[in-house]
Length: 141
Image 1: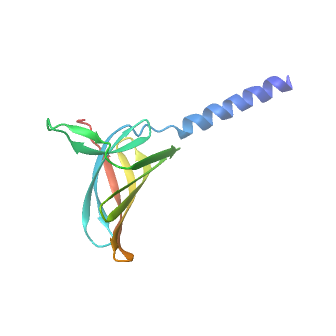
Image 2: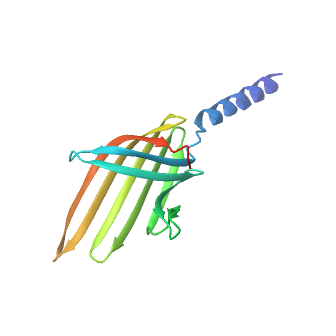
Image 3: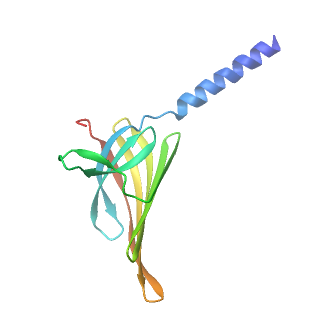
């Protein structure tokens, strides 16, 4: 009897824990963030099975996943989804980081960091910004 009770308890805890962590981030998310420099920046992310993609417009004018970044990683857990990408070209290297938090079925809270470094002589100069705001699910996509 003890085994049956313990087994049932473990199964119940596992089901409750798994369902509490499942959020459907899939879709096209868009919005403006306010940066620490006082600017407003438009952000558009496409999420598919916790994989976060930047977007671009293809030759037909359609929205498409942007695979041009050198390193793209994303990881989700519970109501959080984090992603970053890195890229470089010529004398510059850039990293962008996105921390997304589930607010509701149609809204995500976002904290975003962009950091760019430029090779200059024997050293580097750098610039960037931090920003926050919210993204809305684009229901038309």
